[in-house]
Amino acid sequence: MTLARAPRAPRRAPTDLTFFLDEAQVESRAAAEPDWLTADRRAAFARYAALPIETNQLYTTYVDLRTADLADVRPWDEPAATPQSREAAAPAGVAAFASFTESTIDALALSAEARSAGVVLDSVDGLIGRDARLARRLLADDRSLPLNDKLAQMTRAGWNRGVVVRVPAGVRLAEPIVIRWAVGQGGRALLTRTILDLGEGAAASLVEELEASPGAAGRGEPQALFTGSLEVHLARGADLRVASIQDLPEGTVAFQHRQAEIGEGASLHWALAQLGARLVRSRVDNRLVGDRSSVEQVEIVFGAEDQLFDLTSYTRHSGRDTTGILLSKAALMDATRSYMKGLIVIEPTAVGTDSFLGEFGMNLSKKARAVAIPSLEIDQPDCRRAAHSSSVGPIDESQLFYLETRGILPEEARKMIVLGFLEPVVARVPLASAQDRLRELLAAKWDEGAAAAQPAA
Image (cartoon, rainbow, N blue to C red; front, side, top):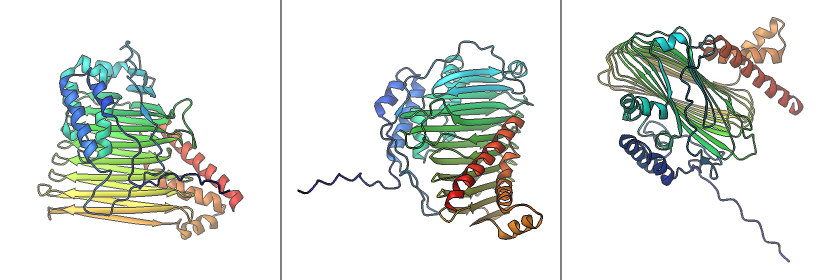
């Protein structure tokens, strides 16, 4: 008697996305919203349905979504109501504080100084009810998320939670804004929009914390999906510093989109740390539309086991005398993979551009794999600088030798080199407690990986 062979699971292409945004869910959400928002959701859904996962004319696409098992994941239903109290005080040392657990709003709070200065902190739903004109300007702007990105348009069509921060012209916040997302419940999808709007001459700093919710899914359990946009509008002379610490649970797949429009003389500083999640796709779009505008961006990855990090950076120079300094760094243990893809576009109007793109991978095991693909598209020859650089390799043996000759044990020397490699983001976090937490997370991840490697060695 021959036993029947169990059917094989169907093979999936690297670009197959198993999560499906249901049009009926989009329509259900849009039914209770203003006509302009309904039209925005529908247009985004049409783009989401038509677009491929990734296209680029300058390089071979690198996409692998096979570890994202999202077929049974469903978006959260109607989001929880915004807290009724508008007088809650932010924690000490913080100008504004927003906290979310899955789709529930835990806190929306301003310091007394921020409130008296006219700073706005509200959920998107709350803002629509309180200031529909401002909400429409920020939510329905086609330039606020990339129109050619399938996953960004999925978030735009199906978002079920959002938060808005508005800093009026001339207001310069000495203390940071903190936005915390605790997510990861198995079988659930949270699609979020975070919008920052700074008026002329305004200044602020933001710390974004992405962490596990109570009962978040771990490795081997039904996965969760978190998609998050961070949409930045900087008026003339504004200054914004953004630090993001991503330490999501192992059962979460994360799709992140950050897009900024930077006005005349405005400056933006990104410091992005990617540590957690099963699979991460991160895309950052910087649009330097104003003369003398500037952006500095540093993104680091510290991966273990078989995590996958897919990082893309697009910077478009349109104004005159603009500056863009962009750096991606990945330190990879075990069988981690990272794709670092970057493109700088210098348009014909961008006379006097100074732009640099660097992508560097450090492979800490023979199974780790880092891919670095920096690209330039230059349509204006009158540039101060247009350059890129990339490298991938193991720890520099000469650095190890130097530290060991100073009496430092080999494993401790390796730890010092790796954490020093990742320090550029840590040093840019504008909140001391968040800096300390990030250093602790990096050190703990190294120690855990080193301990797991000992028995195999």
